[in-house]
Structure formats: C-alpha cells, structure tokens
Length: 124
Image (cartoon, rainbow, N blue to C red; front, side, top):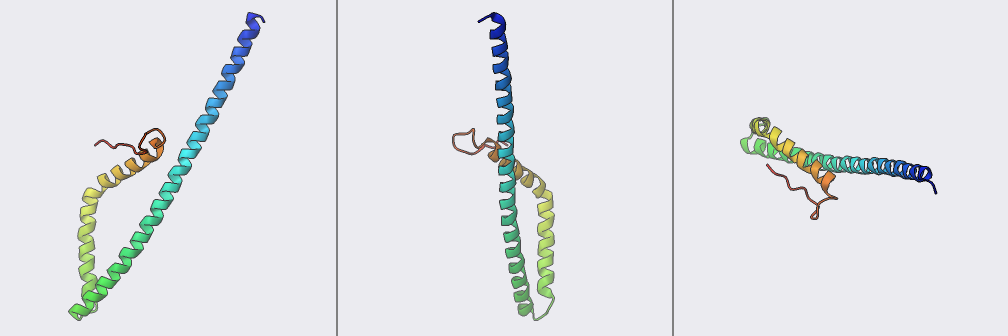
C-alpha cells in the first residue's frame, strides 16, 4: 500500500467522520428542539387550566361578595381593584421573574443529559 493510497483512505475516513458529526449535531438539535416544544406545550396547558380555575374562582368570589353586600356590582368592583393592584405588582416584578423562570426551564431542557442529577444549577 503506497503513501498516496493511505492518504486517500485517511481523507475518506475524515470526510466520513465529519459527515457523521454533522448528522449527530442535526439529530441532537432536532431532539432538543422537540423537547423544548413539548415542554412549552405542556406548560401552556397547565397555565390555561390554572387561568380557567382562577377565572371560575373569581366569579364565585364576586357573586359571594355581591350577595354579602346586597348589590349586584360591588363584588366585581372589589375584585377588579384587587386584580389591578396585583397586575401592577406583577408588572414591576414579573419581567425578571418570568425571564429567570424561562431561562432556567430552557437550560434544564438543553443540559439535562449532561448533568448527573438532571438539573441545571441556576446561578444568580
């Protein structure tokens, strides 16, 4: 076997290795992106269920307050003021909380295979 044929053989093996690494990268990216989509879909369903539960609870509390105050609108007025105050505080604090939560969840999905305990350790 001549040096030229060994070089060609080595070149073929290197090209094959590069192609395999490309395939591995693409499969890994597809796997992780599907995991991200699935996790976000499940979280969206959870949020929707919690939203509906809070909505129904709010109507129940509003009707109970209406009965207590013997007026048909006071319960809804009290709850709307409460939700306005809650929205103000969530607006002030919620951006950083939501950003940290999403970052933490996405890092958990991407690095879960590489950690021994399956969780990314978020450092503030």
